[in-house]
Length: 213
Ligand code: E4P
Image (cartoon, rainbow, N blue to C red; front, side, top):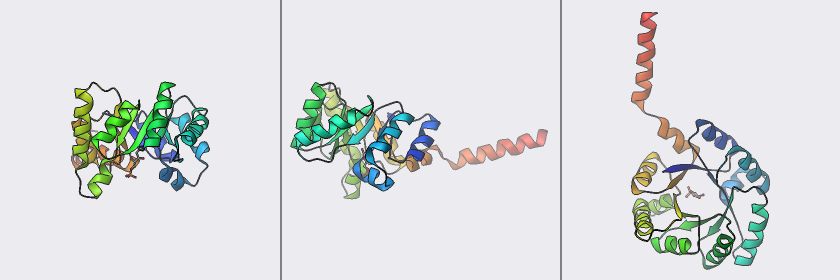
């Protein structure tokens, strides 16, 4: 499973990028709003940090308006991926963009059928939100498993981004389930680096080393 970072915070993006573990970025309107910065400015800065797909989401609800927004966004950088909502209008925009070779990410996917529709509309990426399902007592990892199974059976090339990952267990289970990509906040990436035995091991190595000097 490849890893993207799920944030619009450039400091967090730089930290994850410096670790060498991420190869893309996902943003959404809530994440952009949290930064209190101009949308295009922050997305442009992100493209200068990470050399990989950068998802920038449209906010219009009608396909023609989504396409207008997409026109402006793709001018920013070739790595810009147009993030579209999983709606009839979003599928129409996805289909039009994919026919032109523009990368798309269909977001807010909560059922296998939504993922299948997004893939058939030509989505480069489909984003099932596993954490938001877990929040309402529905097994988010099972959704990832089902989408992986359907895409494998039908040889579908769209990549599955396990999104709305809240903790390291989500990341591990999404990887086991076969998601192509997991998009994670920096906090989850940092937690994944940690284990008390790693810290204890380092402390012991250093203490032993001091003894032979
Ligand atoms: C992914 O593309 C979304 O931006 C994100 O994973 C949503 O996560 P949340 O449910 O924590 O808001």
